[in-house]
Length: 222
Image 1 (cartoon, rainbow, N blue to C red):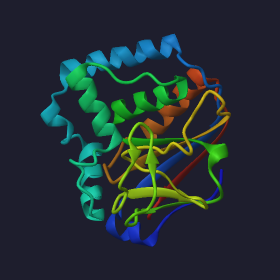
Image 2 (image 1 turned 45 degrees about the vertical axis):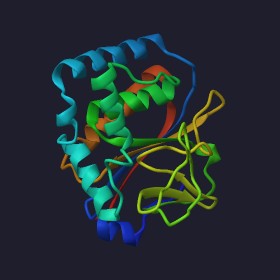
Image 3 (image 1 turned 180 degrees about the vertical axis):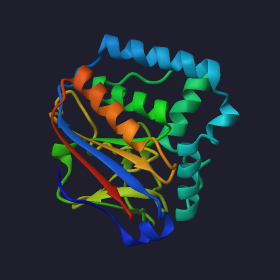
Image 4 (image 1 turned 30 degrees about the vertical axis):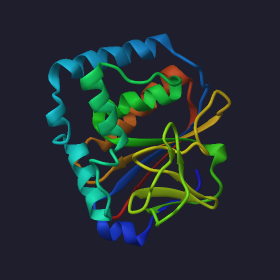
């Protein structure tokens, strides 16, 4: 795994930020039936127990929204991916099916409330810095087109921004050709569950994406 660090500017604004980084070899498939059954079970469970108005109060979601505000971004206008997923689950009783690797990521996200980045590691150029988006910084989000990432937490490599907690980028997106996968679970200070989410992610990737050669790293401000 390449070097991953948090910028001083972001550390100051979000002092409890921690990143759980999971890199592994994977076999990407369009759909894994057993995994999708687990996802549908989770969707049914959440649909019965969670209300839309309560999503923002979940510890991981609440901490994420506070972090966006601290950086200067409106979390209601630029919804974090975990919150958007949970709102879709509760309102529509569904989420998008993408592929076994991204689907596993989404299951971890709706279970934990953490926004999670998923990237083709071979498309990342050099070291990674988690910082704050700049004015007019170019970014093309998956399914969103050009995205205004100013004042938003953002992952950058030598070629520029490639990931945000609102939307991953087209440039480093996971496809059927992806061989090496990087997942970054973003905890803005929810006071727990990051280890559990990491273990769950490793278990899912191992079982449903034949993941091997794991490299795990936790990056924190303390």
